[in-house]
Length: 315
Image (tube, rainbow, N blue to C red; front, side, top):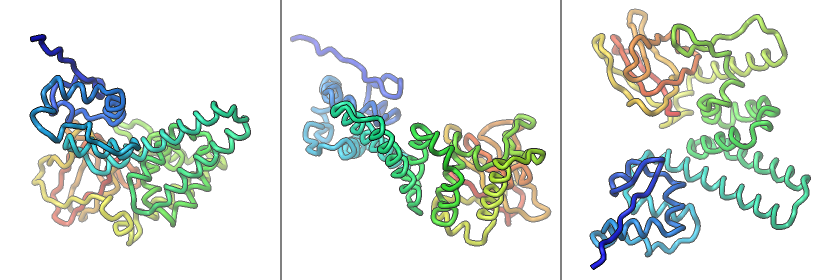
């Protein structure tokens, strides 16, 4: 009998030999491509998974759309990922599919440049509309990523009007704009490296119209996070930690995920610090993070006050 020739899949640039490997390195784009070209089913067969467990018989998937297919595959392989992360990836996949469909249509019908520009503006406006969804953080983050990746020049032209449109309608979108590396610089002070720390410092000597506009938007953001209803407006998207660590660092979030620090409320006698997970000499006090929106890789927290609360959001 001929011996079965086995092969690995490559997901997220890593070799996949087992279901456990697939779960750890599950890449929506890679897995969806393997599903469509038949390699995913062949891999399951040669590795013996389809015979051992009926749930891995993906030939029984009947849905046609990419979004529905990848949703089924996530369930089948029991992928342990953050629900918001999955939703954000699915939104981005949907955006990219629509963008590719438009491009195919242009090429098929030899569309004029004017038509392409009009559709480009419509695509940007569609992203902006989704930013006004006051509660779905996954839709908001994916829309901001699409704007930053594909419509950035329109954002540069319209970021002021966009800010004031979102300021009251969707404060959650304002926070998400500060999480994105490309968009945050349009609303925050200039970021300088101070003693190895990313600390935002306003260049008060610059008196251009751009800087005056930025100061106005920045002050409005500070007013927002210091308002009495900010916590309620953010809902479950704002994480809170209150604990006494007796002078020791406590692991709050693991390294490998980014978090934006909103504030540390503390008593006058308490001394509270945050830092990126495991980073020595990276201590940040309330003075360092107040109205700075510092982004850390994981979070360590140190507190001596039971009345202190650390507020942060996942990027």
